[in-house]
Length: 218
Image (cartoon, rainbow, N blue to C red; front, top):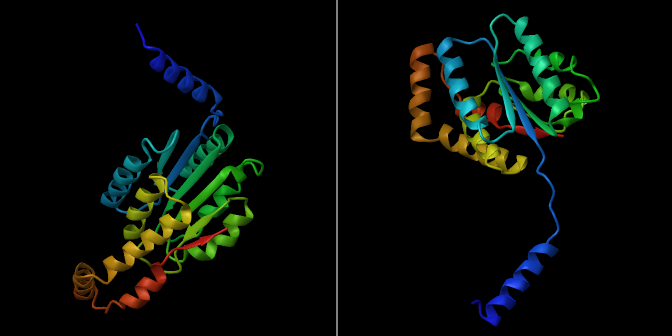
């Protein structure tokens, strides 16, 4: 038989639990990632890492690999249209070298649905210049790089932190710090030396970092 003290503790716990306000359901989230046409090993590497991070972090995600630029436009528009129709928050990851054309694809998504897009991240060289165009279409935040960059290093750290729940500003700041450290490390120096040997062009690390440091636009 339960003692009176135990009964009192159970009763108090039950009353406290009953009085706790319901926080409500968590927002549903979706992600759409688009990889531009690059050599097959780069496409496979991007897909392996990205899908691995998106799994479990989002209610649903789409991953699209571009091959001819026509069918993929339709697939991208369809995916973003469905995502912004059926989910509360949507993130877009544009994995490109720098073509500055994907923002025109977003214009085909119904305007009333675009404000659900809380983030667009673009790996493209000079992608930061596209920020006004993306924001004008209704997205909440845009992250891009100023020029020719080392986005793969940044993206590796940024996506891991973002999907782990860090705020956008913190995830970008931490990924920038990680990238800068890598560029100025011994490994970065060896990489620069290898690039110089292969191309005959000297790598200006400070300039490369200036072009890589990601910016947040709202």
